[in-house]
Image 1 (tube, protein in one colour):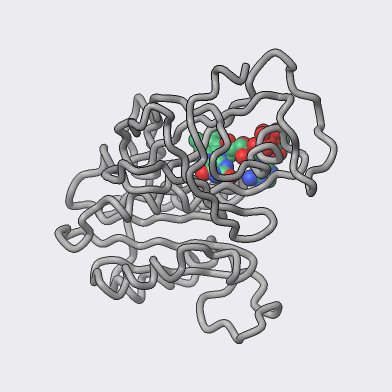
Image 2 (image 1 turned 90 degrees about the horizontal axis):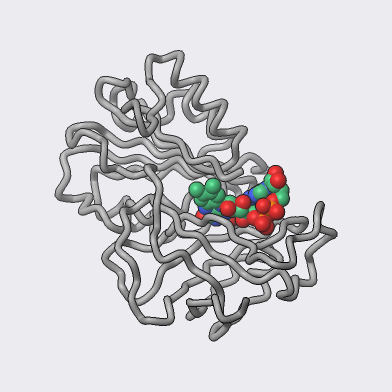
Length: 270
Ligand SMILES: Cc1cc2nc3c(=O)[nH]c(=O)nc-3n(C[C@H](O)[C@H](O)[C@H](O)COP(=O)(O)OP(=O)(O)OC[C@H]3O[C@@H](n4cnc5c(N)ncnc54)[C@H](O)[C@@H]3O)c2cc1C
């Protein structure tokens, strides 16, 4: 099964014990073309070691098959030196405890064809883009924001990223700089446990849904995002995705599917 492994970890950046940025390069040296927002499939053999913080698996993996899972690509589509992934550890999971043992130089399986419809491809050019992410749900938006020539666009972009704590908001520096450079980009990090912060938090508090209800973005954009002028992208925790979907459907947004174009685009991670 090891012979099926076709990619190499070229860099690993640990964000915490349970989150990392992993950069991967196919062994043939060719990164596939992809649209920002798409995902690739990574895999490892079931007999690969599991990391120390892993707990008992709910069910053992099939010993004869690679364990494979989907991961959104976070790097820009024009970067050809590596593909970047932002991965969080699921201690009882099958793949992530194995992924978290990998070090630069280790091999893994990588699907040669990234896929997915969670992209800006079907959004009219005059529509504003509103992105909501929890945790690693930020990954596809990093790819979109790193690839789009934001400054050359008349549309507005806003990213609301929710986490419990400020230290669980990676790419903050990059996103804050982007906001500074691009007038049409707004970055709104929001944390739900401000009392735990070692330094008082001056930003938004609560959950992503609260940022919609209290009109945080309306004040910055000077108008309320509506289906006539805005497409919404939701990615990450299924609870957040479902609640935001309900909220936006009530306001007249429609769900985007392969068959039926709509104004709310969804990527569910589990
Ligand atoms: C299109 C797509 C893109 C994705 N992109 C990313 C990404 O960029 N980064 C990333 O870290 N993950 C991403 N995921 C999730 C990823 O595919 C795996 O599901 C996740 O890494 C867990 O894999 P596992 O084998 O360790 O756990 P599994 O054995 O698959 O999971 C065990 C159980 O844990 C629950 N679970 C799964 N993931 C989580 C989670 N993150 N938090 C809490 N509970 C969970 C599920 O209920 C599942 O039944 C994506 C999923 C999809 C469908």
